[in-house]
Image (tube, rainbow, N blue to C red; front, side, top):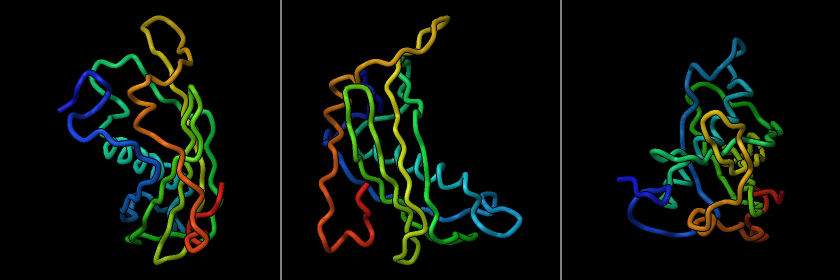
Length: 162
């Protein structure tokens, strides 16, 4: 059940890292049989939304005047993904300002990095008939996210530093 504080009722915990598992779908592949590059951005967005739910929030709660458009997004591709590959999207909060959250997404298949990306979302106010306006992230939302610590040496091979 959603509450008025932009989230879901229940556990209130700050998150900085999240692992989201999924399978490459046929509709996400191109004529060569590989996952289309645009699918990687969708995987990162799915992981972001799952991370928000894990923090007890929703990116788009009922009757909100807040939005989260992307102001930056990129991916570097290392290995192809194919139909029915099982992947993990390892999402980390790597930056947090008064108005933005920046995430790193590491997409892993069978223990190997397939792609590394980053995207930044900005908190905006939406009012009918007015242009969107960047605003500070509401305190109750900001409190739910922390910047991830630098990964330990043993994990650096699968969690590159931004």
